Image (tube, rainbow, N blue to C red):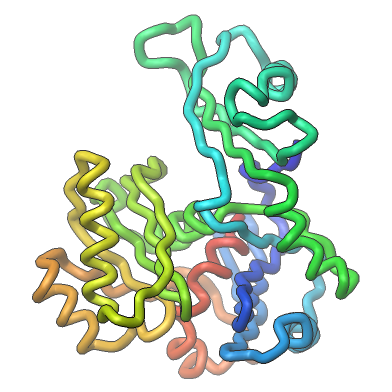
Length: 294
């Protein structure tokens, strides 16, 4: 069972990559303090393997603890209740034995992890557990590329979780229902959450017949149609996210405040890093930042 959701406080390289881009960020952590050590960002690359190799060499990563992510659309995410007398090892064995029931797949077909959320609200004899699973070939598709370059992914996270984690790190009011939107060249990611509770997540392919604002509005409507959620603010990140005209258009058409987010405001930056260049790239580095925070 792959340990996805359990955090340890050591240096981590978060790698967000797709068919034509790579974003890497190396973060050192001690207690609640973080230091951005190095980063690399490449867009519109013709060869993703070569770009990933170049990015890893550029940041001169001293840590081989690497965190990557798979899309939210590839996971099975369920909340279930188990006997409160079970410890974590026993919960793990219970989930393995019952993987077919909860995921639809035999244990040997999937990677699975879980997080204990606490006592069941109406039954003290039960514990609430969040189960996350995905087919092994979905993980292998990401990890094999790193293995070709003699690196190993220590953590396999989920993009929606990493996005939530990165935004929460910098929100002053974590109780506000927030839609974090991350714009890629081909995909729009959205995580809706309130504090640590993920309420909704989705990934949609970009429709170039629509404006970004229209796509965001359509994605929000999908959320409203399936969940009784009132979104109080939007945090925009990714490609073109720092465009003030886009922000104004979203505010005007969707009528939800768009919150500016400086994702590196609360962390120390290495002296060798050009802060002006980093500020320009910050919206695109948010997902890799969320992975490095794992």
